[in-house]
Image 1 (cartoon, rainbow, N blue to C red):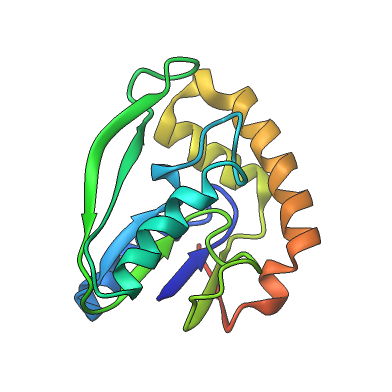
Image 2: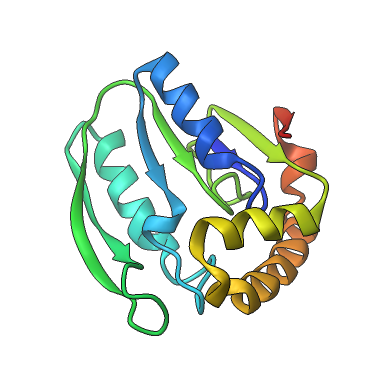
Length: 160
């Protein structure tokens, strides 16, 4: 399992997609689990349950968070099936957390300009999300400081 972690708007998804093509890997996004109100905590056991199944040679399953209706109408979405073969790329904020004991490799994608990352995220998801992204970035700064995610990464990739 490879984690592709980093702050919002840094280019994690783009990097993970290119890496998955090279490795013929499955991608799981932490966006499939997180919500605006729960960026990192309560959903983690659901992810671990699916990964445990795969590690045991079984098919893992989970339901994605459906963000399509926007906040506060976040609901359970489609079911995702994970197959116990090949590489899994866990992409997204908090994917390389200390508690993720299944990692073979942790990659931290960074783009040092927080204002530019905010604008990328707003361009991607809409101006109506700006205030939520500002709060999310504040949460990320605290999370990364406590978790020491960047310092523990095997590789740090700087995006442009």
